Length: 253
Length: 227
Image (cartoon, rainbow over all chains, first blue to last red; front, side, top):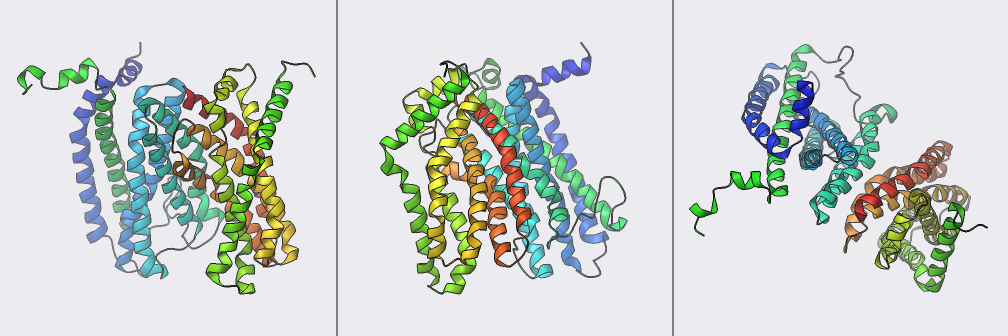
């Protein structure tokens, strides 16, 4: 078998994934910390103040990467949910459910930083703008997935039901992304684009991209940590988990 | 009609569900009473000023109707689960999505249709201008089947749970927000003298899509919940 494919198949096995994630975790956390510090240094010190908004625009260095991550985490969750439903891979169920709280946290940070920025700039904490409303609905969708997952006793059935809900809710993702184009309301249109030139000065752009990289790395680090714990809970009766624990003879019992 | 065909199975299911509802027809009035009471609360809270009430009438009626339907959704599969007939539906050789589509249709017919029929009364309570009534009725006629269909998917996911009411609300409401925005938006646009056909057409397009996809999704969700 092709070595890459073989590795991919091995990765689906919980004990293998547990060791793999354990090896990568410190590196990912370190990378997230370093790139995050570099990005924040650029965002707070080297990037020039905006000619109109002054220093308050620096909130967007947190807001925009978190907003990207709120969509990315949902996409990741839905993609893993699809894999879990179609191929019944246990690891994908765990990954999908582990990414839901992280995505919800990123969505929440997006809404809070957005309203902190909106107060001095737009003069209001909240407005029923299309982008804001659809992001709020995204937060509720995350809550629905998390709530459904915790409401069902059987862990695997709960993961499958919640993954299905995540797939249904994916219709909201294009609405969030294109809301600034379809409804031309208060929230500004996108200035940074993957394809084609961005409408932002390079001195302001590089800290943003560095922070976007840092949030992605942090997402995967947090995801691996959560998945490791979830796997231990899910497989608590299995031999490989018992082997990780100190043997009962050496304990008090 | 030959027995054993999919058509006869659907007709039998429709007949059975309608008969069950007819035997407990007092319960079927509850959503209507709920909607009337919710709508009547608004003049108490906001004061009886006609201009204020007319301004919020369409949106209030929409929310009251959606909430009334939401409360009745909880019971969509419950009695079938308790007496075991839901498992029989899943095991039957006929396409489950079609059978669930019949159940959703019965839900719409017995919950949403009465609500649409009393909508003129609700509109009168909030002194909605009479010429707005057709727009409101069309918007409700398009939005309520959407709620039945999308709600059925969420009910199918929560079917085995004992206390699913709150969770169901959490699952359904985010998915139904666009229907509310477009439905109430059409009424508000009409009230302002603007063109209102675009939001209605959006609702219709979404309804067509849901008519095809939601029964399939509900069937898949039910299979996940019943394993």
